[in-house]
Length: 261
Image (cartoon, rainbow, N blue to C red; front, side):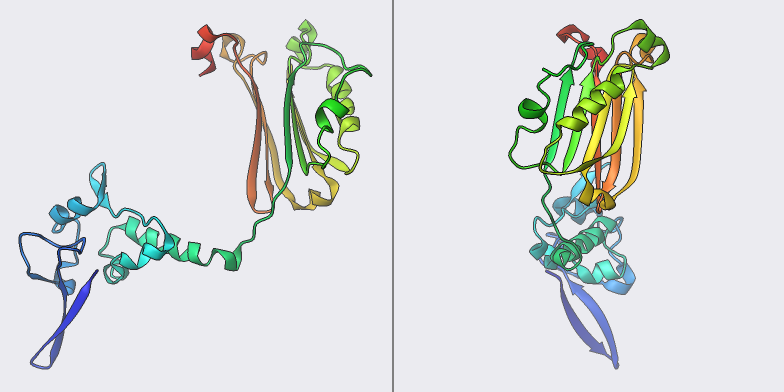
């Protein structure tokens, strides 16, 4: 803790900081007083003391962050206010104060998200394809968001060359029909790269809370660029939370781990 003593000499008050062994600014070799206005407790003149009680990253020193908001009171608030304490300590106080008042400006709500992936190996969807009861609607409670990924959607040469395939619409319609019957869904985004496809659905009553929707695709196949391998992604803001779904199809087998990395 920091303790201050007022010494009045000739009608003037000098604010002094008493260094104690429990103080992070204390020096075990001396018991002298440091003038707040003259010394400012800069990193240079307190380096030997700071290194004893702080963490070191590179050539800078900063205070260990408090484990709980209740510990913010142990930080040297007076030196923080004067700019003498390293910046990380200042940020710790701010984060601690915000954490203590988190309930005043935030609220939490639970949502159900279904995430599924299927390597269809170039097969077409049929009436016997178990999309509904065995996959997309297997839970008695409807999810709020669906993120459905496919790999090897179409293995034909035409798809590889032109990135066009009738199976995209075929599997999209099949998924849409198989969504949970207890809720109504709208599509957020569909993105496809050759045989990789990612579809995101959301309940219609929650669609108004979606914003900043974007999609991206990266090919890592032949020559490190072609779309037979790689990934597709969809991101958006849901309320005030950022959500991102990634569907990837990378090189197979254990010996190809370097290509996957």
